Image (cartoon, rainbow, N blue to C red; front, side):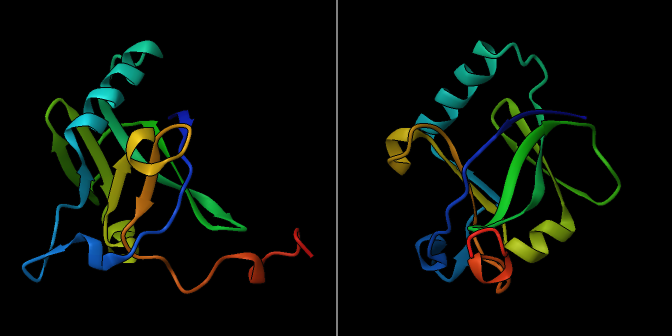
Length: 132
């Protein structure tokens, strides 16, 4: 597995993702984010559009996710958004509910963000001594 890039993580309000009482897809990405994401992959020489959403660890701000090139595993949920396939371990879906990928225009940051739908109760500065 190769770590191709790390995305910043912020938490969103789950109510923003509920439509008609049902949660949206496990991975959600707007059309503009999708087009920019494809361009990003091409610019960085990523020819394989099968990417795993991976929990890289816990930081002072909570969970840190990255995307890695990987192959399907038995416990994976497979989500296709046009020509990009995301692999997500079902345990991550149980813990975080799913993910939203936004581009800079949508999130107000300098690049893409990968946000879990549900933030865990643990994490943050109270669990790390690095800030104190």
